[in-house]
Amino acid sequence: MSRNRLLRLSLAILACLGVLLSAHPALACSVCYGDPNSAMTQGAQAGVVVLLGVVGAVLTGLAALLIFWMRRAAHLEAEAGEAGRGASS
Image 1: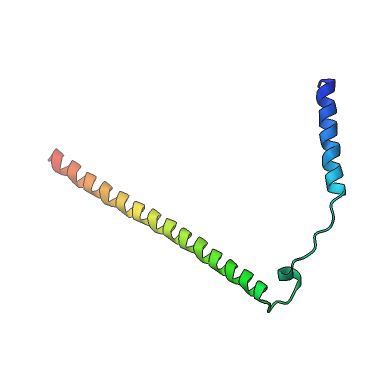
Image 2: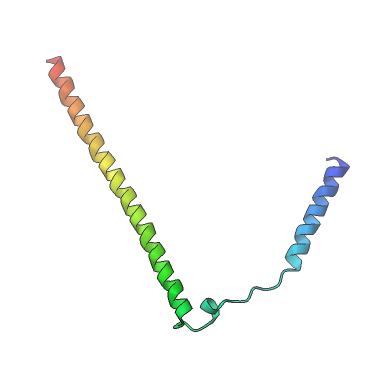
């Protein structure tokens, strides 16, 4: 490696170490640290339930689409087989 590139790499590593070593510990918010019956905690729990519902709906739609495609492919394959048999007779 060239001397200039090595110097830049060393400075980048020192800068990253400086940021990591000077970081202060994170303090918990009222949802994590506070009252489990507070409005903020209940709102966060409701948000999680809504997001799980959205993810479930999307995955259910994807599964339905895949099942539809599988049935359609089987139907088209059966029609192609019948048409092939009718043409060769």
